[in-house]
Image (tube, rainbow, N blue to C red; front, side):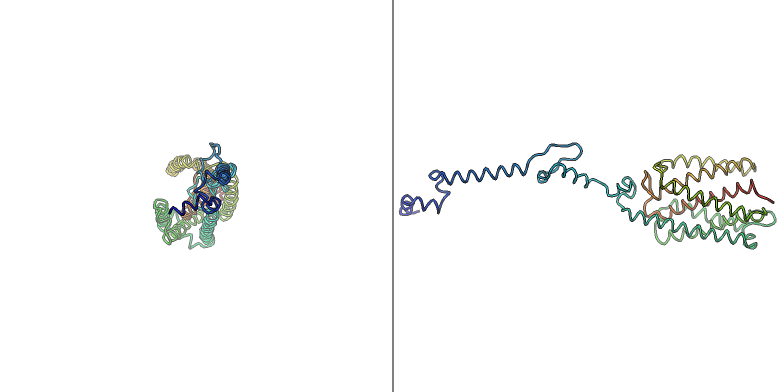
Length: 330
């Protein structure tokens, strides 16, 4: 600044204060006091805005930019973020923890739709076996009532297909291979069931009545156990190992009973088999419905369908054998 400008500043302090207020802080205390008051107000607002909150063990400490939210809202938001969306449907620990409830419902509908088709095919085969002597002769030799080679071929195909579906997950999950395998298993195993019914029809005079009674009893037991599996709070999915052990023991005993042909032992084993597969039905139903410790994924609809189908059919065959032993009339 020139000497004239400096001199003019000394002569006219009022105008310099208005034009250059920051250059005269000491000479003009009113302006300085206003600035200090404004700064204090800003600091008090910031302290109130960034008020520290007490740490709570039920949630993690939130970042500083969220500490302005009241503590209850912070806890609520964090709990909402950490909450699994399937907790309301008791799916939190499942293999489907990232799958919505609608997808689980569609999975259940698909499983029971396929199951209905399987049971219809089996029912059709059994009906033909009851009314067609030629069809029964295809499965059972009318002279000695032994299974024909065609029956054992169907049994082998169903057994191999079942092992392939259960042992190779890619086959059970890949479309259309899973549907093809399921179709082959259903048709071949339906011939096996029809062969058992054909034997009952040929050997016993009241064979048709026994088949009808066994079917009705199986339907009632299946419906009751399905409702129970859906409504109960007991977790039967933890009993998979125990069921496998009992079924293995029962299978060995059936082999002994078949070799020695002990009718009483066979009757007892059939009764225990019905009970065992009743528990299997509850176990498999909970795997499909979900909400328990172990569950099937939505890609395992073919496996879930075969689970329920095998449970129902084996239960039907064992009930039919019990009725044949107790009430069969030759």
